[in-house]
Image (cartoon, rainbow, N blue to C red; front, top):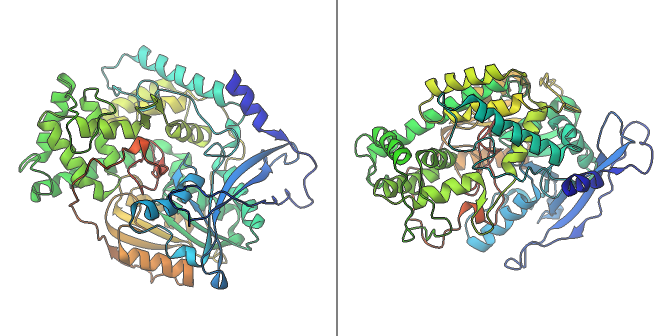
Length: 557
């Protein structure tokens, strides 16, 4: 009850009527908010923007959106502000922007905004229900036993009544703890917030970089405010129409893409056994399946003497843990080796430490506190409010059995998991379900897609480009979720050239991925995902759909 009272208190009555012609533009009182003593020369400013809770009744109540800004380093050539969204739904932007500047300074390596920050103020914001904004959503759930991806994963042998009971308890808990805000967290409302934020920083058009689910937000913004589009990049694009209106078909396509990506890992492993640490010999696929079966029958112990120095959680590893850790690591090709490969080799040799570490990370589990990050709760709640799921329990049991019979490894990513959405009782406020077509008079977004993206399949990217009509597709031939910054110098040059110079790459431009199937040995200095200082960046229906810049990801829609 205390959490419910706090939620209500965070949403305040507006002090006055709306301004003529629309809601008043927020006044931003930027204040210094440097984030780390380890990087004393990296400076940020923070602010809070008052926006209407309900755009249909903008004078009724106010909601506060948190923002962070890293000012342009070359103000004489400043192009304005670049708003960024990392995906989800459920990912906040304030912590992630700070981390994308701090981590390269503290840990070394290139930064996401090294080039763009010269001419843009980089602005991260926490969409409704996330991060530091009012009443951030949190079901306070144990993701391993209560959440939508809890284990053991449901199969046709799972007792129907037990699954219904678990899911009903989880949905009821989520609604009770978050009900006052829930109807208003739709992407349509976030897009309307974003247009007010654009005006608040003084930009006549929105310059925007969106990853994963952030591409759906970008497409929604473009559909609602086509005349306000500036330079917009959508990386790891979602099929906007399927995501919001046909989520079951969207999840099935995503699950198929994850299976395809796993097969590509097996192929790479078979052809390069050195990078695969000898796992599986000439048939890693068969070795993987046998290992999962073995771990389900006899869980694999966790040794405290392991390459990662992982001693925080020593629970034995099951086959479901192996699947969970593996799908988690398929988000980035650089995770194939050493992470997936070495973790599987250690597990086959009787040590489940690497699998335990990354299964915990996928659940957002912090062994030091025994708590779980709320990212998956936020992912579920925002999607459940606005995606079209019928109230028909039998449908989800049929879908679950079909998914189990179709997808050998990742069936849990669609079907049974959707029962939670079918049980969800809260209606949406401000939902926008299309059309997503952009007029020829609008500025043209650059859509960046990877041919073997497991979280946002390439065919969905082509569908989004077709729906937008006025859009330019840039293709990267390669693996993993999202392409800009760390995967291809060709992609980086095209994106930077567009955002900084306004020149779209020629139609039909194709880039190759630079990342190869190899990696450095992990060391005991490695920071576990659930304890990493950087916020998650992931994407889709197995955890939030977010760009993966650190090893703390989720799935996509």
